[in-house]
Length: 262
Ligand code: NAD
Image 1 (tube, rainbow, N blue to C red):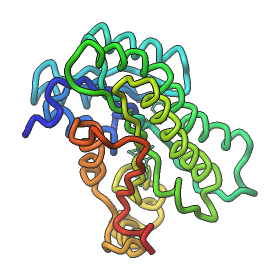
Image 2: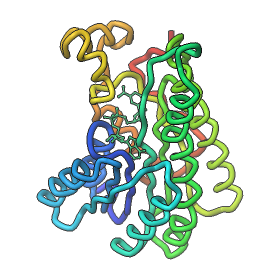
Image 3: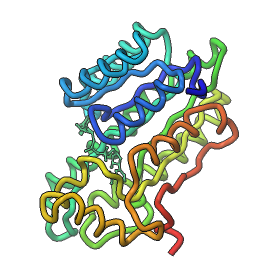
């Protein structure tokens, strides 16, 4: 532990498993207090318990549907009540859908956009006032990290709704960055664009081919020859969340093993 997040309070959505869990663990190890939220209330409680076993008092778990405005108000209020403020918001909760434009139903399209895009919009909108108050009170700076995807930059024939929502997150992050810069709030906003990461979101591939073959197949598409480990992405979140990136805003950080260089 090097205390890269010392004194910071972070809220991570979709933290019951996968990338959100790895991120919460990484930020906690680096000294942050973390609020881990998810629709999977049991899952997120287990994650918070395991963090508190390492550093007592470092984590709270909150049940949270990112598509619901009232949930956001409750969660942000609870973070302020327990930890006294907020410096870092990691909009990580997300779902994927492998369907082309003709297959996807309007209901599925709306669900993917509700979670992957509306959830990020609500998170930024409702958290910014608390981050602003926290930063104004002194101490470290504020940072919003939105987990988009390389699918927000490179389209796939069968990812219509996911491509659309993740591309919108990329641009929304820049709009938020410019808004915050203009207000001089000391809050930055950036997006991260991972390629395939070994998390349960890839379960449909795993069910089809078995874990080893599924990961190998996906890895063959990546110049570095493998899919990402959750910590490969969590390190990028750590950089953008910490004050080491204090002059970085409106940026898109591709953590993609080189796929977008092709
Ligand atoms: P995951 O499925 O393992 O975890 C996603 C988490 O989000 C789950 O715990 C789930 O319960 C939660 N969630 C779903 N709907 C929610 C809602 N309405 N409100 C709150 N929480 C909700 O997936 P992951 O791979 O850890 O994905 C994390 C993020 O990374 C997502 O935004 C995803 O699109 C993005 N991403 C993942 C990959 C990958 O290959 N794993 C690649 C690029 C981007």
